[in-house]
Length: 133
Image 1 (tube, rainbow, N blue to C red):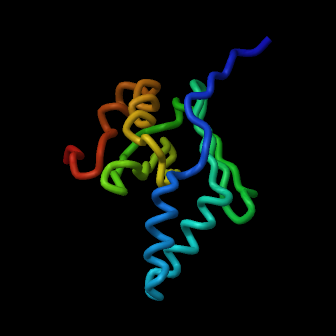
Image 2: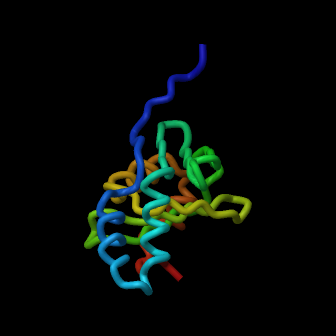
């Protein structure tokens, strides 16, 4: 019998990201942003559990990345949509990065992830603009 995996958050990006980018799509210059937000809304899914973070995305949702908390070196958040949602960049110990775009309730999700990090990763993590030099 394995260790139970409790799901904290499972779902897609915040709907506000899609709405704002569709409205911006009426200007031709913002059309690529609109297409990107539609693709994210259709195929991007996050699953954050007590054991790992899984991101399914890419064209038709064919790409999947799974990381465990012990691999994380740093998490940086950037608020978007007047703070209703935000982006997270998770840097792994090997230097690679995983970007979570338009995460709903990103502050609560960040707090949940931060509780699972090593003390060294907690010290390196935070909100963009409040980073220690």
